[in-house]
Length: 146
Length: 219
Image (tube, rainbow over all chains, first blue to last red; front, top):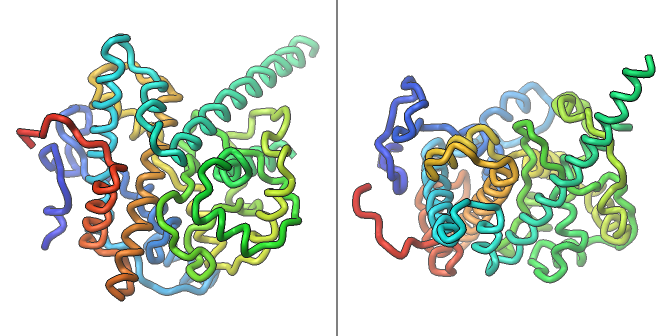
């Protein structure tokens, strides 16, 4: 089993040297780095980029790393997942005409952890926005005062 | 203090879940935590996540599905990492925000527990935890993907954030289920694609994977 047969993929495989502006070609490895860290965080074996650090003596660890075919498969699965998710959200949003975050939340209604996580992320985003606004206002005041 | 706050915020996204916003969905990790740690160490760090507009590796995901014994495997443990210098430097760009109040300060009980757990981490556990909290999908990449799926150019920032969060949790479910599959088959080492496929199949059966009502014809 070679790595190119990993998982369901809805788009033709574009070489990574091709430009990514076309929306129909999907670059391989778009999420590769992120996925590697994520997989390590969730329980896979030690990460390639970490082993370098580790071998430098920061931490003592095993030297295995997530297999590239596993990462590729995960990426395919995640992209398909997000695609299906968005399509389903668009179905609910079609009456409204616009796609809103509420559509995602509606889709997640059965999955409590995800739902809570989403609401948490959104509320935190709001808070940060407020905080940033307040900060900007203060900065302006300082600037004008000087 | 600003820097610290931001850093902590960005690394404690998951904390909120454990602290109380997830009370209704008490998942195995939470249970494991409560059992394993004495309930008394205020985690002042936990400010609850932040969703920055930068590509920040911390759209966090709380491990949802599998009850993979958290104590034994030092794997997915949500408590916040203490401020490490390297992390603070990475968070520099996010430090222009002034924080009003810390959202999670309302539950010192949970924070205490978290702190207790955190303090007992081995180095490996800590690094894994840090990876867990800091990892996330790049907002730019996710936005590109969303744009290509919807065909519309206007994807709001919160939508990217939500999508990244959901995707990260999904990855978590997959990896954890794959680990479970591995223990069932008594295999060790890195996770292999066959495990992921089996995990994916199981998640499909559980209904956690959105299925299209019309099958995809031309892949």
